[in-house]
Length: 279
Image (tube, rainbow, N blue to C red; front, side, top):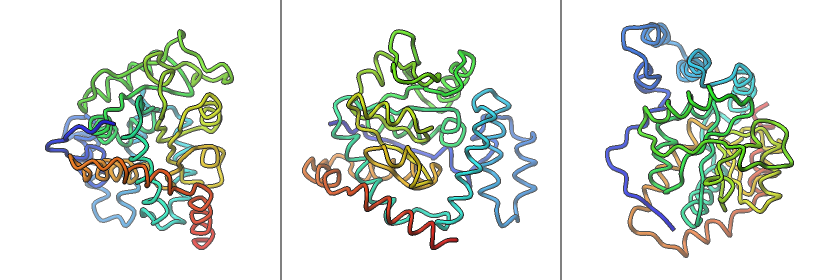
C-alpha cells in the first residue's frame, strides 16, 4: 500500500483554468486569443478541451486519430449530462482503492491523456506511488519523447518508456511494447483512455485493469476490471481528490470493501441506462 502526501496541488489540466499555461505556451499568443474568443460561449469548457487536443497534435503529443476518438466520447458525455454520475463515483472509489492496495501499480499514458490531463496524471502518480508509463497505439520515438517531455513540464519524474525488451505478444499495434519495469511487472494498470484490444490482452495475462471510457458498451468497458464511465477531464481529478481525502488515515479494510463491493455489471448497466435516458 502506498500514499504520498500532496502539497499545493493545482490541477494543471483544469479545462476552466489558465489555458495558455496548461498548454505550456507563452501567454499573449494564440491560446490567449482562443480563450478570450470563447469567454461567453455556452460550450466554453468543451471547446477549450478540444483546443488542448489540437495543440497536442501540433506539438506532436496527440495523433490526428485521437481527435476522432475524442469526438466520439464527447457525444456520449453530452448524453450523460457532462457530469460525474453516481455510478462513476462508485467506480472511482474502487479504482483508487485498487491502486493504493496494489504492490506494483502503473499509470499508462497515451497522447490524448497527456494533452488533456497532464498535471492530474502527474499528481495521481505522486499520491498513489504509481509510476507513469508512455504507451501509444501509433508508436514513434518522437511521440514518446514528446509525451515524456510534456509530462516532465508538469513535474513528472522517472517516466517509463516502451521497450522491445518487453512485448505483449497477442497485440500487433505499438501498444504491444511496454516497459520491463512498468506494465510488464504491474499488478494493477490504470489506462485512462484505451483502444480496447490491449485491455483484454492485459486481463489475459493477469493484470487488474482500471479504465476510463465514456462508452459503457465498448470492449474496454466490458473487459476492464473497473470501468469509470466519465470524461477523463473529470475522472482523473476526482481520483486525485479521493486519494488525497484518504490522507494519512489509510483504512485498508475500507479500501478492500470499496474494491470488493464494486459490481462491474451493475455499474455498466446504470451507465447504459443513463445514456439511453439522455437520447
